[in-house]
Amino acid sequence: MKDTTTAGRIPTWLSRRSPAAARLLTVGLLGLATPGCLVRQAVYDEARAEIRREREAGDKARAEAQSARAEAAQRSAQVAAIEEELARISDDLRARDLRLSEATTAEAGLARRLDELAAMNEELSARLRSAGQSVGQLAGERGSLSAELAETRAKLDDLRRKQAAAEARAAGIRDAVDRLKGAAFAGKVRVGLRAGQLVIEVPSDALFAAGKAEIQREGRAVLAEIAAVLRAMPEHRFQVAGHTDDGGDAKSKKAKGARFPSSWELSAARAVAVVQALIAEGMAPGSLSAAGYGEFAPVATKLTAEGRAKNRRIEIGLVMDQEALEKEKAGGPSAAAPRP
Image (tube, rainbow, N blue to C red; front, side, top):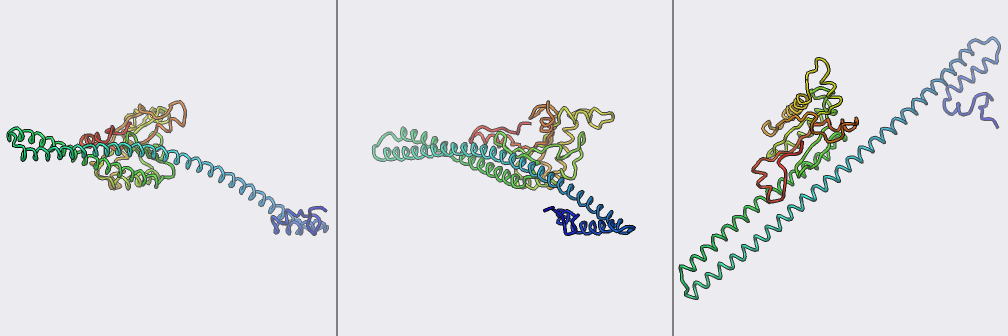
């Protein structure tokens, strides 16, 4: 049996896909079968036009479906990258917890030594009372032990303060990392720890146009979310470091009449622009500083477009002052500032 309608000439697939077009085409065919009927010829032409429109709509729907599949694949790749970064951050936090555990062990050792000295002190007091020995000799021995006991207590108290400060800083950094990970910024921002310190890396392409130092609207939205997290850490200072590449940014700078004659000026201007944006979002000016590294601190190869895109970045890193560094020595090695 042929795949046609009741009229015998209209395909069944057309009747299912566009009943209106099928009816118009049926009327047109009947009109063509009647000699001299010009009006039904027009109906037939209208039916053919409707079929063409249906085909164009189908082609458009298929193109949109293909585009949606491509976008879904891209989103999956971004999710995989974020999960990889979260695993790396977890490893850094475990290493930090290990150093804190070692400090706790050292504290326990000092506590045991304190107990031993207290017992010795008590023993000497008993000997002084019962043995009738030289009061001067025993007093000197006891004074020496008392001084050692006081020194040990002071060291133990200092170690406890340092450990509490280190644990508080670690907890604050972990909380900031968790909040930044929760924001995700649609995969535009990388959050991690470098030498135990928080580093936030934002691609320059998410903030600036090529060769420019003015922050775009989408970039300000990203910086507003970052500022909301960093405002909760008022006791810390942060350095904003600007980095360029030796490719697209360099060509923009060398163009005739370019505003920034070198990568130094461009990277520094971008860092200052980010500092100003963070201040506008409520961060204290005294907690921020800016630095420009030009194209001379790359994190990826300069030979590919992907590598150069990674090199174009803004880094917001936690900076520890000298006093904090001295306290941190009790808990293990650390660095004063993130690597540029």
